[in-house]
Image (cartoon, rainbow, N blue to C red):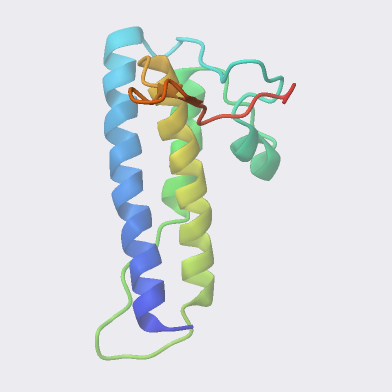
Length: 133
């Protein structure tokens, strides 16, 4: 795997982790750790995290646990002078990114930022597709 690609994947996962962590801390400060959170019209909590870990994210406290799972999958940036296979680190970082993105999207719903309506066309763009769809 290209060191450039692996470095970009790992760097992006760290950036998204930081964003998710900041959003989650703000939500906990505002709503409390026991605040119930879910996507609309689903029986699977946060489905990506649930599918990969069987851990149901039902509250902001649970979301913090899921974010810690993502933290465990983060890796340091590849060293500048040494080559090694980076595939495992890049794949772990990709999974951490999926967890962080799902947490960010759920928090956007919590904050009323989803679904997004295009002001010019009036079309509604859902970030999360419900079970019924």
